Image (cartoon, rainbow, N blue to C red; front, side, top):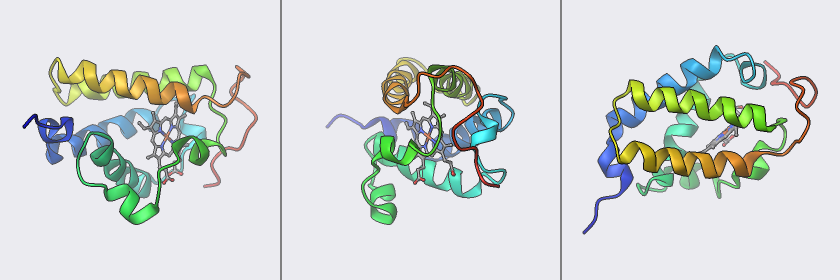
Length: 134
Ligand code: HEM
């Protein structure tokens, strides 16, 4: 049987990936304003989501129901600039935690497709939309 991406990554690296990713998000001027200042819950949900996204147990759905990712992102203005920023934070994190090719390229492709799907604004200015209510 072929291994899932989740099995190839392993829980430890997935955890490191999420931590590194949100370190970059928290210091990115395009992204920080729409995220909460405390990333504890954001990280927990993302770990659950990525586990199932890459073929592991459905941890996210078990606790939160169907991901409906696009709908859950609607409160935040996501333009192409922010999607690119999200992807650049993830690209850095994938390298930093040493996820090797071809797994890295596979994961980045999946992230890219999903990030494009999250775009809900063609307005290129960073202001407007709802900033996170910290
Ligand atoms: C395209 C750029 C993206 C932006 C700007 C963005 C931004 C956000 C923001 C602001 C939140 C809320 C954080 C919180 O309140 O804790 C969030 C939640 C989340 N994002 Fe994204 N996101 C993007 C793309 C993605 C992608 C590509 C994925 C998955 C591969 C993803 C998965 C999630 C998940 C699972 C949550 C938690 C949803 C929940 O509240 O249950 N996001 N995102």
